[in-house]
Image (tube, rainbow, N blue to C red):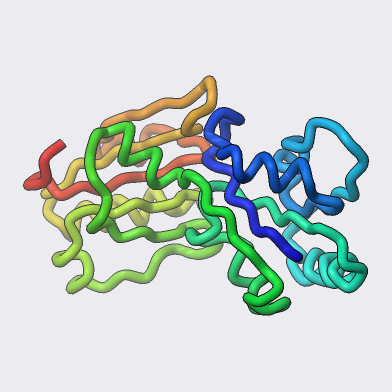
Length: 209
């Protein structure tokens, strides 16, 4: 069985008990090097995931064929821009189970005390989001998962298209010791640098905060 484990936004105390149990019981751990350190003791095979996802999938397949207990560790929640989709597609849902985790998006909205049931979630990890004018006008809240330097210019253009009718927040290093939540001006997008572990929230000003 392959268990896809949501490991939360960063801090160990945001890891659920179900996630920690799956990690502790696994024979094989697959994930980013930081996540592999969540296994504190006991013999286990560790497979670090790099940009070459197919290599990781091939290694998972070899261990899966040997009926080993495999835990694939992903940051945040497996349902938000994670490796989960590739794993399930490769090995079939019948061979996988998913343990949800606390996402950075959940955490960011919690920090500003605003619900996120109507939020649009966009990723800027591998390419800039593609969102048209109609989508922009109909969306009251956006969460943009950062990861590219040019996302700041993209955000400037987005705010300009909305005629500055939004409030912008940068939620950096969520749950970690150096966590920072900042309300931004458009000037901040040119004058400041931000952590690669940043969620930008774009909130229309008619929403209660």
